[in-house]
Image (tube, rainbow, N blue to C red):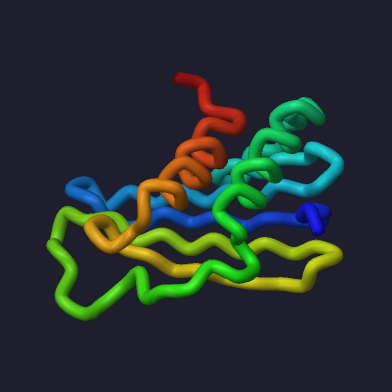
Length: 114
């Protein structure tokens, strides 16, 4: 069944500058990006949901993080809550599948000023 998104919570930590990013998205389009609240379109929510469906988020299998990642690498955490349940995936640069990066990129672009 397609993902019915209630909410999503994304964090990105680490990197060279050790700058963190937090994004919360509600199924109704409410977006909180690093504490600033805005709204995104239903199309943007649908795009993220479609990408989550494409990677089969709730059944995705694998280990995407490990000890001793590079000092300048990012660590990501993505929690999705919906009618399908709740699931969190944590991953590190170098261990994240390309399809999951597509989801991360779409989420990072929500409400971005650049």
